Image (cartoon, rainbow, N blue to C red):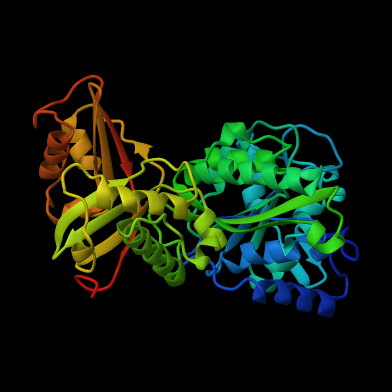
Length: 456
């Protein structure tokens, strides 16, 4: 007897997105083409909106267009909008039948989650859930051979979602976090609420995310708590609301798009990097003539509004001339770069303030930091063995003192022991110091600089 694969059809084809294959394919392509250039490196996860395509399709297009690689498997995590249940649920079928063609469900991965007690099979959780289905035409259009793991969040701890995502994590898997933002506030209220949600996502404040921030808050929290999520940086791709389509500003739904990149990956495009470097230089130049920093018009580019921590370094003929930065994200990247450029130029206590004559001889470089991760070690020998030369930045705290070395310091202190001892000296500690309160954290950076040894 011939075995036939079981199919699950899209309940929301014809309502949230077109049921006609040609019309749907054209609409998906239009959303992707309108996205333009996103990050420079392949993201490991995206946040994708899930309303009707007329309202949120362009935001989903921003998210999916940022994925410049071909995943073998796509995990989609959605909230449950209409059906209450406990846990994390996958469907029983073998294939999702979309208007654009079939998508195979990764039954082996689903079974593994079930065996681990992390998810279970429950068709009712998927029978009337648009948060999964709205993502499928994009996936089918871009990666028709990808295996799908569709997961709907019921009443489930975010830690369980994190464990499931960690169990599925591998270099060939993309995570899609299906979520809209605020619901049915006035446009002004929604703008404020969604800005706060963006900050929470970008600074990794998982515990502060609630359903009134985003309907997919449980999935977002799960990603941010997962091992992969903790090691990733978020890049804001776009934000908006339904008023752009309906004209109704009294009751709107907010939408956003984000991509997550491995720590230290090149998430900023060449254009975004050039803009930031120009803004840093203009901030110093403007201060020299007694004005206030006026960022370029391009500074309103959405990715530059991402909350991120940065260091700005000034060099003259290759020698350090100022370096100031932030260790944790607490404001938009463009604002952080402006403030740190001014501090590096005029308030680094190791150097006199920059002069107009010196400015043209300075070279500016910017480092965008990933989130620091604790390096838990029993002794210094273990710490030295676990530091990755050339890549890891290091933060040392002990006895109320703290020192920071960017990865660029490896260029002059290439040996791990010399690197760590130099960091101790910077923190005001003896080179052989090791105490119970000794805390080490590692971080990666995305670094870029103005061309050439100096600007003319």
